[in-house]
Length: 539
Image (cartoon, rainbow, N blue to C red; front, side, top):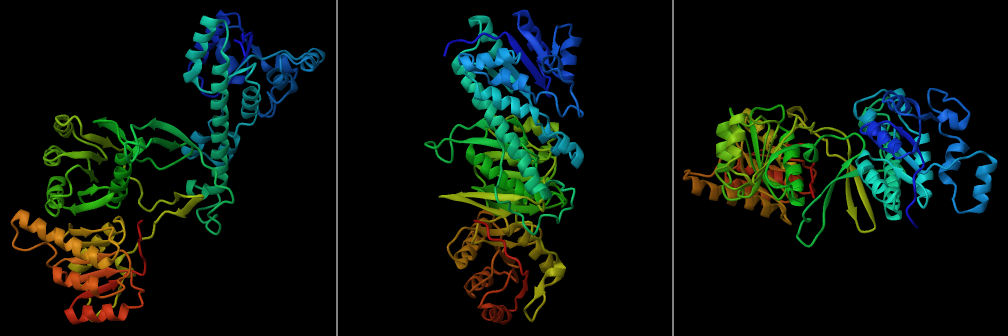
C-alpha cells in the first residue's frame, strides 16, 4: 500500500494531553476536524474550526453521552474500503464521507477502579463507542490511521509533513497497538467483574469466596520496561505492570540511584519486600536476602543496630544481597549497609544524610516506596507450567499466640513464645524445606531449600556456628534459641539437630504421622513444642 493522505480526522479523547496541539497542526495542513463532547470544546476554545459529531450523524449526543458515535455514518466512514466500487456506491448513496484518521483514547476505567470509584462510576467509565471505533479503524488500516496513545502524535505529524500522509507500515503498527489497547481494556473490565472481591467488591469481601476462580482468567498488563536479559544472559526479559488496580510494589518504587534493575533484582527485591512487609508495624527491622531467600532478619531499638544484629548472624551470605528496612533509612544505617557490596536497598524513605552516603556507591540500587504493602492483602498468584497456568490465592494465613497448641509436657516461657512467633514470621518466607532459629528478636541461623528437613536444620546450625566463630562469640546464637519449621516434622531427626544446636523450643504445624515420636523426643530433651495447625510451603 502507498502513503494515504489525511483529509478528515475524528478526534475523541479522554486523555487530552497534546490534543489541542495535534488539532492545530492538523488544521494547519488543511485537515477537516470532527470531534465529540469535551474534546470538541477544547479544540473550539483554542480557536480552531471543528465539527460536532452530530453534524455528521444528524443525531444529537444523547443518554449522557452513551450514544454519540454508534452510527453508520461514523463506522461507514471508518470501515469503507476505498477501492471497492460497491463500498464507494454505498457511501455516495447514504451520504457517508470517509474518515482518514481516528484519534481515540478510552474512558479511564482502570484509573476509576484504582482510585476506589463507586460501582456506578466504574460502570459509567466502561467505554462502548470508543472501542467500537478503534476496532473499525484498525481493521481498515489499509486506508485509516488509528492513534490510541498521545505518544504517537509526533510521529504522525512527522510523516504527514514529510510524505503528505501516513505509511502503510505505520498504520499496521498503530492498528496492532490499538487492538492491544482494546484487548487490555476489555481484560481489565472482565477482571473487575470476575475478581472484584480483591478490589473492594461493592457486594462485600466475601461475595466471591465460594468461587474465587473465574471460568476465564482475563489479564491486562502493560510493558513497563525491557530488561537487559533474564535470569541468565542468554534469556530475554521484560517487566509488565497491571493495567487495572494493584498493590504498589517494586515496579512502582522510586529508584533513586544505581544501575537499572535486572530480572533477578526484581525477583529478589520482591521477596525482600514481601518479608519486610510482615514487620511494617514492628520496631525497626532489617531483612537481608540473597536469591529470594532470607539470610538474616533482626529487630532492635534502631535500624543501625538491627542491621548489625542481622549481619552478625550470617556474615558470608549478605555480600551482593538485598537489604530491606521497615523504616526510613538514616545515616548510621546507610554507613553500615555500604560497608559491603550490596545490590539493592529498599525502604519506605531515606534521610538526606543517608542519600549522600549511598551516593558514594553509584552502582547500589536504592529503591524507595511510599509505604509497605499489607502482607495479608487478598489476591492471586500465578505460575506458568508447560501447557497451562497454576493459580492460587495468596498465602494470607496468619496465627497469634492464642492459636498455638502446646503439645509437650513443658509449655514455652514467655520469651520462648515471643521468639517462636518471630521465627514463624520469617520461616514462611524461606524456600522449603525451611528451618529458622531465632532468639531475642533476631534470626540465629536459616536453612532452606534442602530435600529433607534434617539437612535444613543442620545447615542453619552450621551457619550459626560459623557466624559465632567469625564474630568471636563464646557460643552460637542457636544456644537458647527456638526453631521454626514451616511444615511438620515427619521424623525426630530435624529435632535432634535443633537439640544439638542448643534450641529450647520448637514451633511447627504438626499433623505428621510421626507426631507422637517427635513429641516424645522433645519431652525427653526437655523442649517446649507448639503446633500452629498451619503450614507455609514456599516453592
